[in-house]
Picture (spheres, one colour):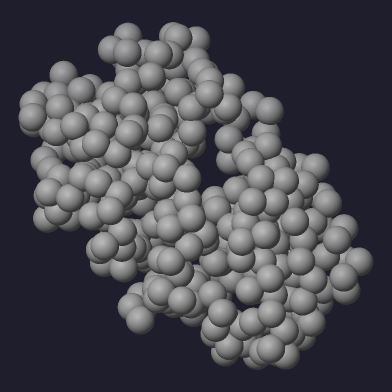
Length: 353
């Protein structure tokens, strides 16, 4: 088993990575929340039939009283209606301040259940058990929890760190191709922003089978990078911004498709390519990087470009949380494996796009 610690002062937590971890989840959770008696297990309608019973039985064997709450699968569940539903369900279950919420699923479940855990009773313990590649390498680590608003994604949320993250690489074998590819966009991002050697490894292993054969190392590398960045900048005011490489423009592509046409990973993939092109135009990014990234994302079935109107670009840039007044920090690469925040006027960015 591979173990990583996210070293936040007074609130450090471990990320455990091991095949076959789900049936032992209850024991690991008991070790970090020994006073808990009740566990609210939150999952979705896709994951519940696959892994819900396994985790619920493991929790029961560890001595917890367990109740499972299933939300509809899909981004539409990351909303105030489902959040309020969870609050009421937790209250009816009799959850107390010493009890625990377990999020079993992808990024939507992790964000929704995490926000519910952060706000019910002013905060109860949260355990993340991510079941998609995107959630394992990105959304389950770092403490960002949120719901979407009609005006945009993740606009209502907070920072709330889990007590433990459990990752079982075996669950990734059941992912549809598109969902696996979604996660690969974030995997590629880590190589682009912080590890040239990892980026080269991905370029030399451009297939799902090759990545799956090395999945423990892939997860460990991505989580190591994120843990280091989060430990340095938990509240996303400095270096943590580099984790948003490809996301400023990616949010525009998601908005252009009304959050249904393009997945998050597809939007980020196209956003990384476009950001690299912009970096080259600004004289910062080496000219070979944009085509190199394009070739890599394409190998995993991800788009290298997504049509987007000026209005959608303007709306996404206006809502970008890295912005301040008339400018924002656009995350660009100055060399393979290294990113920085580049201050740019929003109007100048719009004109370049």
